[in-house]
Image (cartoon, rainbow, N blue to C red; front, side, top):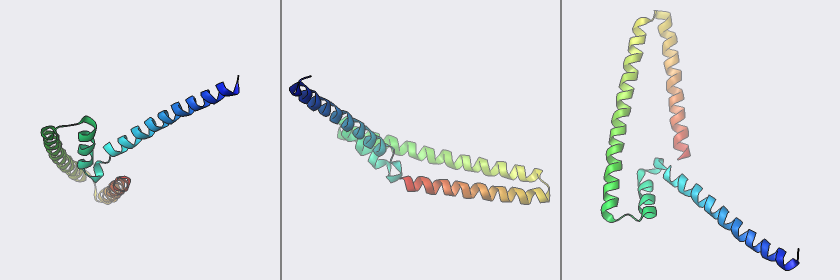
Length: 125
């Protein structure tokens, strides 16, 4: 292969590789931004508005929709916690005194794991 041909192929491959790497990095960064709800859903809303070229009315509608869903999810979370607590009380009624102590230890371990998980998730955000 001639040096001129090799040079042209090298430049062409470099250009294509640059486009590919840029595209991959852009997709990774935009995915991270979309999943950064820990910093608030505002980031997600901003990305939607920019990427989809939303009008002011659409931005308002999306904001309203996401806020409504966020409230619903919080309600579901509270209901789930209430059910969990009810189940724990019902289990406790079935246990003997020594089993109750073991159950308390188990619940305490579960609470620590849940707290640690929430802290790790908060750190990621």
